[in-house]
Image 1: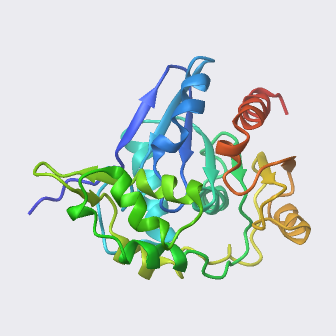
Image 2: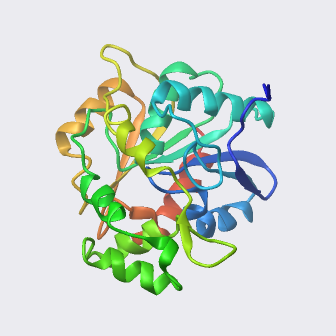
Length: 262
């Protein structure tokens, strides 16, 4: 029996202070590659892990914050990271907030992008429905897969985001890199709120896309109750994927916060 601990697959760029970036639901570390390269050139060692059931990491039936926190601690221990800074977007941001409650003395600073500590209603049903209606194995090109998705997903940016999860099969055709059925069943477990009554005095930056519905003004009040040292910054002309829609603004905001003396 193989008892070797399972460690997230990751890309590591640069040298310097460790900066660990946690991607969102249905994403992967590579979603951050452009910004990571720039930060790696500015004195950070940037880690781009794929969470379990995402990218090139291992698959497992369990997908909830308890096991994701275990995965995160195991990754940090495996790579012997000392007080890494942590950036998290969406699901990765919620994971970062859970971690900030449990490990305030063992991390550097936190940056959370466009997610609040509250519970969220299911939002991804239309994506799972679209994927169920695709047959990538019979497609000769990525354009053919996209044509299948277009009927159910008219939003080009969402189609292109999802298609990063395709891999070409040796004998032709494509397959999905991620276990859609496991992730669909896990949606209620990763939509929960942070526990009531707990607080953390970690240094945190929250970036909110002003065109995104994910973080309301009421949510900001809740975040400040849980993380009283949080700094909030709004990113104009950006929705939920603010690091993709306004990369220059995000690029400038994060190193300024991480290197500031507070």
